[in-house]
Image 1 (cartoon, rainbow, N blue to C red):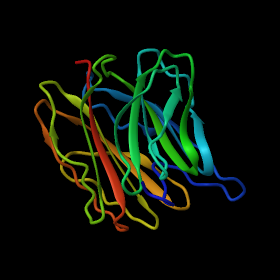
Image 2: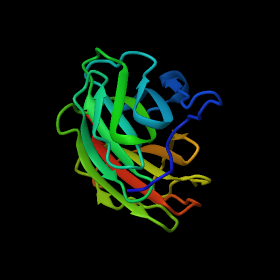
Image 3: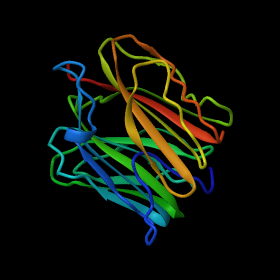
Length: 237
């Protein structure tokens, strides 16, 4: 497990406190849908906090029942013990915890709660991004998931081929600061944002993959102490 690094999406710590929230709804954060059947990003929020045992954020609005919530985040001490809230029962899809640490959890919201919390076992830096997606299946939601650590550039989470249906694919990389990420190669990636605290930064991206697409993305980085993940979700079409 890594020590003293940080996080993902459009977040910075305040000078007086330790946490700053960045909220976005579909009007200012979602990329145009590929077609009418493609999944859509409804809203997202990101946060980071130092010297904590848990971290909570609240989405700008209550999620719609049946939408899928995705939490990408981590803390350098260990695996996240639990992700709760959002009116969802959460499942960890994949994690890499050798260097800076990054995990992806997901759950189907019942629309009753907009606050999501991640919890650890000890005091450390925490960061996360939560996004709400429409147009994903509610059962057997994840198609494929891989993750990997590394100490040389580029960051590469691994390789998989999507199934016989189109997928929403999320890519995320965490690293130690100071660090600069390039844009991923290997697909038409859309920026999902980044979040950081004084020690770590996490960036994430999304794309729509056609059936039976081989994905093996790479992201240049400059600190060389990264963890990366790649997850594909089944779409409803």
